[in-house]
Image (cartoon, rainbow, N blue to C red; front, side, top):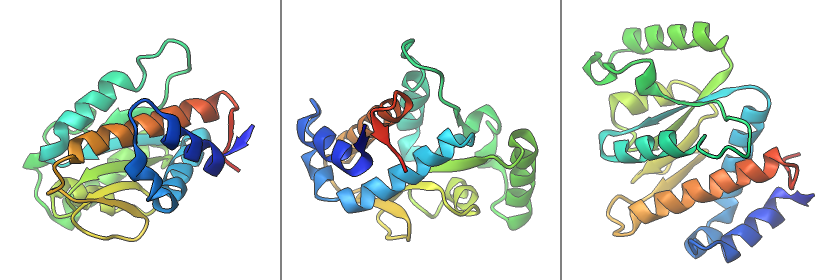
Length: 181
């Protein structure tokens, strides 16, 4: 069993998608991925939220994350499965609190958000209302987040590479090839 840092470095260097750019940012990536995976393996569910520009990514993840029949299902769900009308809610603290109360009841407070997008949307406001989320933020540096630039012509490819590495890491941890300790 390898430690997460060594395994990730190997994956970044030899993966077929060639995410070499992510190797340069491994010190940002590894702690975020580790915390997310630890929470999943400790029984928390992951609620995926994206901004409008990245909805395609949310659909892709939801279609593919549990596609493999060779592993147990992972508790990752889309916010749209609970709130398809999320964009129609007001952007005030009361609505965010009501949504959080609802999710707290459903998940017995054992959930966290995976947010991908800009930090100035209603969806971001919901995700950022919780601490210790899995954040892939665009154009803004936030503590405990991975920052991407929306002006990067390869940003969609980078999102797919990040997802691929996250999914491979999830599977490696699930089957005992990686130690998350």
